[in-house]
Image (cartoon, rainbow, N blue to C red; front, side, top):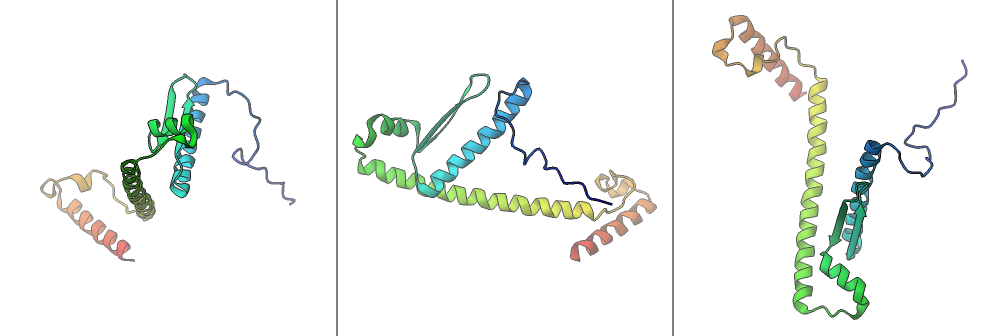
Amino acid sequence: MPRLPKRPSKGRQKIELKKIEDEGDRYATFSKRKHGIFKSVTELITSCKANVGVIIFSPKNKPHSFFHPNMEKVVDRFLNGNESVVSNVDRAADEMFQERDMAMNLKLDQLDVDEEIQKARSKQLDEMNIPYDDKDLFGKHINEMDAQNCGFLKSSMLNFIAQLNN
């Protein structure tokens, strides 16, 4: 049987740049793109220690902004070019904030890694398909269970522990 050529998914196809007519779709697309732009700007700041200011207006004309290190310094530097004189106190404060930001970014990266590990563990546990008839069984107090349910609970827990150890 001849194979049909595989068509690329919508994610890989080039789309024509035009205004999205559906308001809900337009706002959803804006939200996704805004997040991507701000993430790219954050990477630029981290890798190049750049001073950055970004202002984006939503489809409903609401401004969304991102400035680093802060709006006043970015705007002042933009308006005055290289003429602005930075005091030693400002430099020390900037260095302190940059060190704090780098430490927080490292913690955030570690939390992202931890979250991915937890998701993988959760998926693995879901795939184990531990059978039980009554989903509320494990939430009940042992005094509320009859002998059959207690035995089932015990065997389910032993089975679960055995699967975790493997």
